[in-house]
Length: 328
Image (cartoon, rainbow, N blue to C red; front, side):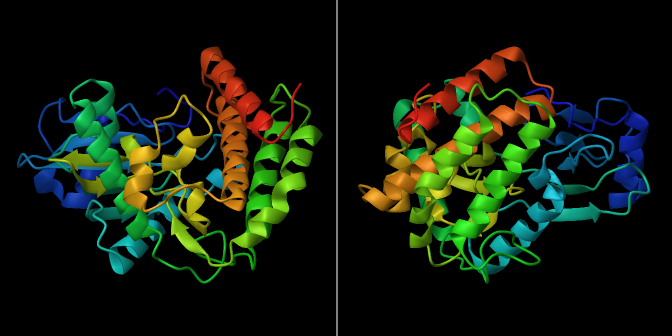
């Protein structure tokens, strides 16, 4: 996926980054040592072959001069905090971190090197038809089981993993949802709806968020393309930058409950241990779908995405508003 937030680097700079992380003896010869992994939506990502043949992954945050949405500032540091938390508090597999540079000395952004996991990306393999329908279903059930283990981690507050949080989930969710709407207004993004109508759709149902009383760890973005699979097992979870303490029902694996363009959530729900939703749970899910739809739509401007992506996101927002009883 193309995005103006991707902080691509020259071969010369990549060599300097490798030397800083692994030493001069691991700087590779030739020019074919770096392959961009282009399916991400936000950061630049490279598969790197070191001089001794070992492979690692380099992840680079956006350039300092690129306009970001409010909740996108410091996302790489949030990801590092999430990786540390997951490794400390659970048995969910994440790639080993090799080196982190937050100095800004070589480039105008944070970056880190991590272990290369020699396994197919679940989402890419599924889309390419490399997995049977049965293997895909087993994979989503395994991903749901991973999600269940992650949500057993309880946080000290709602909202961010580090720093000051919120006392209630309603306050945290409403504040961050408003941040996205403000981002859209600043960039003059046409939602296809009046901003105040979207705010009212949220506010009319927001009281149900008070049913969430315990802050649980959620990846938010735990979908198939952010996991690696081998023999029906999830062997690594990647891209933790949006992780927070909140309501487990917000997880991406449940998006298909409301938006049919996303995968059927049934196997994910089985692995997660989630049955039929209560009225409260269903309404909360609709709110999270609205939050996601607005985010995806506003992102198209901030990331310089195509008109086709914008139109698709508009369609999802129309569905989300309809779920909350709003029609044009």
